[in-house]
Length: 69
Image (cartoon, rainbow, N blue to C red; front, side, top):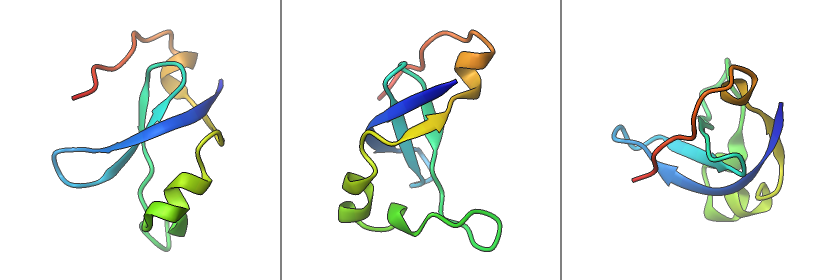
């Protein structure tokens, strides 16, 4: 199910995590060559992706919302 990015936070390992409109979180790492997301690296890049919709596997599975720190 597609959900919009509404914000960001960092996890305990300093990786960027997108906060989705559904209440779930999803890592948005830039780890070439497997995952290419250069927009994650800068504040401007992350801001440009607010509202972008990502597939939320947690919604597909009917999982409860994540607890944000």
